[in-house]
Length: 276
Image (cartoon, rainbow, N blue to C red; front, side, top):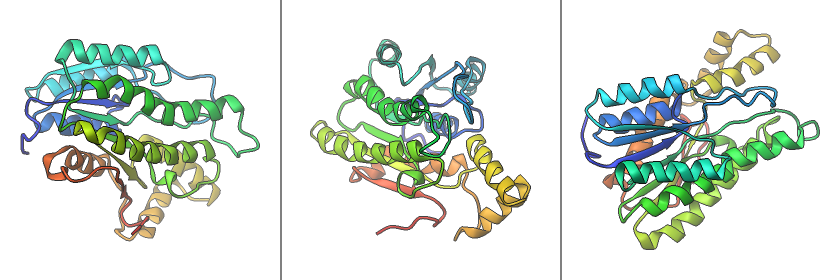
């Protein structure tokens, strides 16, 4: 693997789950020479029903050690992206440790309280928006001032931000808004030479993905394995995506090879979503 990010500093939120997209991105940047800041929520949100599985300090520590074995520096910072003070502290920790940031990946996300619109508690709706939209806003305000010309901001949005999904209204709306926020920041940050893009993953084999697929499989009278085969066969590329697939594109977007790309929302869906 190349070392095109040697000496640069990459900040990745939502990065502690070992099999998640954030961890894959963090390891990809480290493998290409970047010093990496891994940040994640390490406290449970037990007040929300449904899928709520946060990271852990142990997992962050293990990822930090794995990254440091690659010969780069790593910093692990617990952060709740819905807490302005905690996010500002993340910025201060990055500044203290490295003095700057070159790459920011807004990967933290979640969907507490999955439900129909009419049945969803207002608290769960607001929390979902706060994590997936306001969290991006907060982290960008804390980290972007540490960036100089050549910097790159990449937000992990979702196919759900472009295609509606039942029982996921708050998540879909927040992800759609994160795409628009990407475009606005691309305009505003261009004078500083900072590029802003986002990626929109589709059917990616992660813990969150399998949770959702299990629910759908049950509704179809299938096992999870059977549903995953069925889902893969429905995609033009005949396979489910992996966290590595996302990390590959994020790495490209952060590189000089993508120096003329900004304001884009790139679909990583195996052909499930095709747009002009």
